[in-house]
Amino acid sequence: MAAFRRADHVGITVPSLTEALHFWVDVLGFRFVAQTHYETSDFLEQVVGVDGADLTLAMVEGPDGSLIELLEYHAPSGRQVLKPRSCDVGSVHLAYMVDNLDSVLAKVEAAGWLRLGEPQTVRGGSRDGLRIVYVRGQDGVTLEFLQAPALADGHAAAWANSLGA
Image (tube, rainbow, N blue to C red; front, top):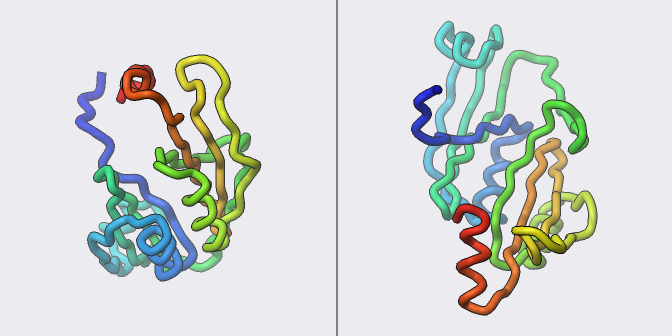
């Protein structure tokens, strides 16, 4: 078995680092950590597997310490914006537990993100009462927001434990 220690970060390629930073920092409340430009080099080409790659990356940190790496490629030309559906092979989404799903949804929609459906509430099972919604940005990135049910103190701990919290 591989000796993984932990996930380090999630990388997301974006069309505009300025717009992505606005969303992740100003809208979602992540903390800006650092920004670096990498010019075309053998090192970069070997790391990303793209000949002629030139990029700027920024790292942001979520309230839980999770890191998101935002990458804007300046080269090569001919880059595509992929917008896979949730059912398409290779589609990826990030899921964040939030305190107030309706408030977060209003903020991300005001920033131009689209909800993929109405918020839904899980009925039954270990996640009973959990509210869920998917949103997608114009760059094809999909996020899932989840809100735990409001429970009496004794039940809240049991519910959180059922999720491995």
